[in-house]
Length: 84
Image 1 (cartoon, rainbow, N blue to C red):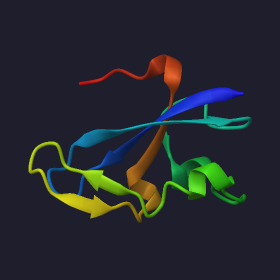
Image 2 (cartoon, rainbow, N blue to C red; image 1 turned 180 degrees about the horizontal axis):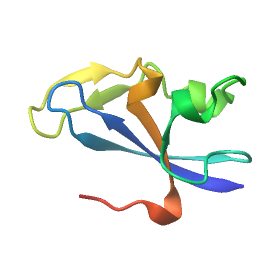
Image 3 (cartoon, rainbow, N blue to C red; image 1 turned 90 degrees about the horizontal axis):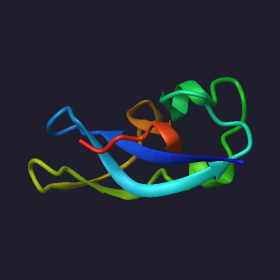
Image 4 (cartoon, rainbow, N blue to C red; image 1 turned 90 degrees about the vertical axis):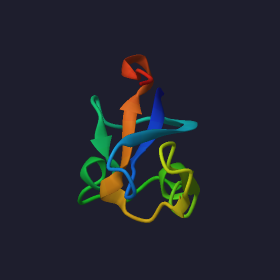
């Protein structure tokens, strides 16, 4: 089972911010991919679907918003995650 870190593309500043959340998947992507791209044409695992609706913070503006768009939520294999 592979570990994935989660980042979101911020709608306020256009940068990616970490959610500081890790999930484990049997058949996740081998590289950074959006949830929409990773699970196109197949069902989204429950632990991935649970990310929707989480609150996210823009580290630049300090504003909070709700994660809703699967094209803006990315799974990154944990071994390749690098914090900015």
